[in-house]
Length: 425
Length: 170
Image (cartoon, rainbow over all chains, first blue to last red; front, side, top):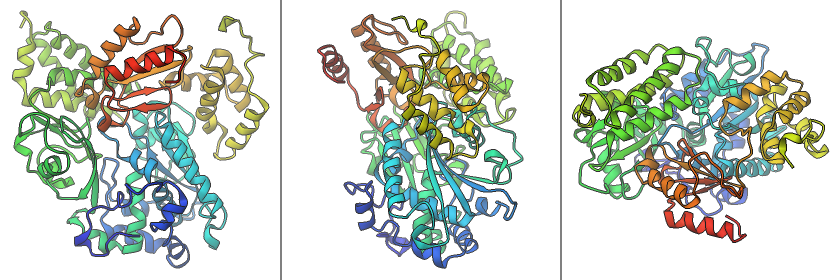
């Protein structure tokens, strides 16, 4: 590990070696500290000590929900007589999110090491990485890294001479956004359509093939090696209390240097966009900032100084989500943008819950009419009603995600909608 | 040869594929988990996943045909119809839309003389609009078969189309 042991000095964790050439190869990864602490963990740490360190670390799930990772692990029952499974969610599909791709293609061994440590803590024999189907290159890089890890006895039987054995398999999705929802991911990994399950039971109790299952995001698992080597307390001291650590933000849209930037939690939106992303393409204050992926409510220019934490973004009326920040300047056509997102959600609805299956279609049809100048005041009311009545009435959160951009548009930019209405208005 | 004329006897995995599948099945608690990877194999070997291929896969994995059908039809990346030799998938979702993806699709459609979702008469190109490719820093993104092309301009696509038409690689 080459990260500073002084939490005040830490600027990034997962991306510490992201720019090292050939970091995807085992030789280079090991030169930069990969797997150096693994043997100590497997031989000297107990599973309960690992879970305690994870709890102390304050790490919250980086996939979107922000649930404390240590707590999630502690829910897994022991000695059930059934195997426990570890699934890495690499189905990165939330519009605006593209961080896990970089970890997988540039530093795959960091993810593998995190999964071995997590697997050891949870007594997992078989672990899987579910990668979105389009990421063919990333799947190939991961598979090559896994092959090298097996050859070096970092995976398979008796890892590094310890009593612990674990298999790791990469599984490709096939173009279904909803499979990023953890129970849909489990269904998909069982070879079925990715339709989310009712919860409870939660996957920790009854997941993959009815067995205890932990589903963690790529970035979450890639943070585990640093936490175990440098300590939970070290991680907890980075960032802001209750919002510990660093976070990768995927910034896209109207900025000059879009990209992935890992920064300590609590860095402001403005600092991220101006100091890291080269500022806006036009103007000085964004018109809209979507802070956590397309499913999160919009923030406005007045929120530009908001610190990037789970708590501050929630206070501002949105969510940190997966850290996918979509920035729009004055040139954005917000009605067209929203219409495009309604099309996305209508296309991706799995169809099992009526409010979502029907509602997403209604949103798309009505807003398309509005955009084309054929809308009426009644259409505007229907949009708001449909969006409001979808949220909270379905098995998973896809419907809420579909409603978010529509409700944000109606709330913050009613004049943009009115400007589109035709003579029937 | 019309693809419809291929009988189920002819849609067969090679022996190498079958042993690969036998190994794959062992990696999962249940054989059905191997369905998606096996569908990808079929798509790679046969170009698309015909009904005959689906029947054959159901047999190989010991699944009812309906189990195969519902997966093939649920996921957009499994193709039941042949596509062009080069599948040009343009992301037109949020980040790409804000960076000219709609204009790019319009340009490509005009250049190739086809609509979104169609294939050129020579069977070389299919244009498809797709959902977020997860590479928004490279907007607009075009996936050409298995390869991502980022920050793609109309000129880039023109050059690619010319290259392929001249017998080169994409």
